[in-house]
Amino acid sequence: MPSFIRCALLHTLGIASLLIAIAPPAFAQSATERYPDKPIRIIVPFPAGGSVDAIARAIGQRMQENWGQPVVVDTRPGASTLIGTTAAAKSAPDGYTLIVSVSNHTTNPAMRDKMPYDTLKDFAPVSLLARAPIVVYANPQFAANDLKTLVAMAKAKPGALNFASAGPGSMTHLTAELLKINAGVDLTHILYKGGTPALTDVIAGHLPMTFATVGQALPQYRAKQVKALGIASDKRYPSVPEIPTFREQGFDVVATEWFGLLAPAGTPPDIIAKLNAEVRRILALPGLGDRLTAIELVGSTPEELDAFIRSEMARWAPLIQRLGLRVE
Image (cartoon, rainbow, N blue to C red; front, side):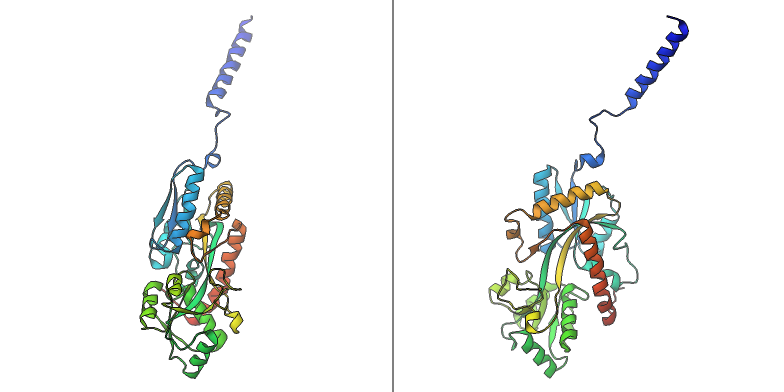
């Protein structure tokens, strides 16, 4: 074989060997394809033991069982969900950090001049998880047994009746303000740091009523420690079908606390799609709702959750501005 042919052949074989050495094996997978291959963290921006924590743990457990990777619930309460939500916004967009957000996510921007993150730009919606309507719970000795009587009493003595909520700008507070506007009455908001101390004072008779999610006082309601004057669902709620809606009583108010799963912005679309499919599979499992008393499980596409978040921001911002609610 001529030497120049032999040299050319050796050169070609050398290049081929180099390409084989640096090329990934045919069976290699990308990080997206391997997902998940390490523990997943779900941030809960509330203390342990509440509804948000319960939802995160129920979903996390099923994820772990199906995917074979640990799912850790990380409770980071404080600052009206800002602490936990900021941590989620600043996390790597790789699908291994998620957050269960609630209505505060859409009302916080209207109440603050500065936000540590952008509510829309810094998150990738995964799926809606659940909803829980707002109920007016009252002390059993309170004179009103329904909203019509409550409104009549409030009109007779403007500002004399007090109510509590989970805090300024919370969905429970905003529902009360909507009722006041719709009914044309004046009720006085008594500030509490959370719904639990407010409920305790209603039971003790120190306060006539509180606005709370249906599950927040369901055990006390069933034990007849409080009574329900109305529920802000669009129709009778399955867990408490005996409670009439606001609309049935003549007041066009529908409001629910909502729960949604978000990821940091920039999370690959394929991972978002995997998460969405898994969450919707979990929400459809029989018996899952048994662990989440009085919460309606409801999934969505990422696009539907994005549209819902935008609509909630648009819905509540004018009311918050009208009320002058500000947090520094």
